[in-house]
Image (cartoon, rainbow, N blue to C red):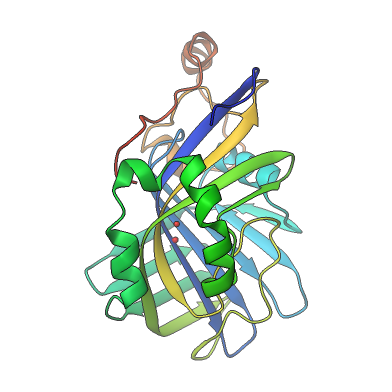
Length: 251
């Protein structure tokens, strides 16, 4: 399955964590080890009143995600995720989140058995979409913001506990992701979990893709700070860089 002329496919390889809380706030965290922007993390949060908030570490990542999904407000703020074998710690502006992971389920073992080069292919994720809808009530292939997306799932582990504060208020214990989040095509299973995934996003060639991944230093740059002139000139000379196909890579 090849993209139509004038389009590019961008690959994001990492993890997605989705949780609900007793307060009614639902949180989806993306932690991307490899992407056209370099390594980064982002947070999508929906309040009980339906307000959808994006927390992204740079203006470039915020612009790209907001053009792909739907939000009521966007904040550019450092987003940091720490991983161990059995836990996540997330810090993003006024959000602090700690997650404890459980043992891999049978479904997780089955997903992890699919070879990486196959699981990441858009053609394979289109085939697995009916199964994902049946078992997890999510989709692995669809469209949003005028873009097509494919989620190549490689692994799944349940989340057993969560402790979160947002804007100085404790959100209460872990709860199902209910009602479902409404960020557009992007979703997460009702049962809190962490999913390893390769996400492929097809965009038109016309400035939607990043010209060059930012450095780790620029990822923490304050909002509104302009890049240096020599950086801008280098960016104009470079084409969007796609991630290689077939390497290990759905949060």
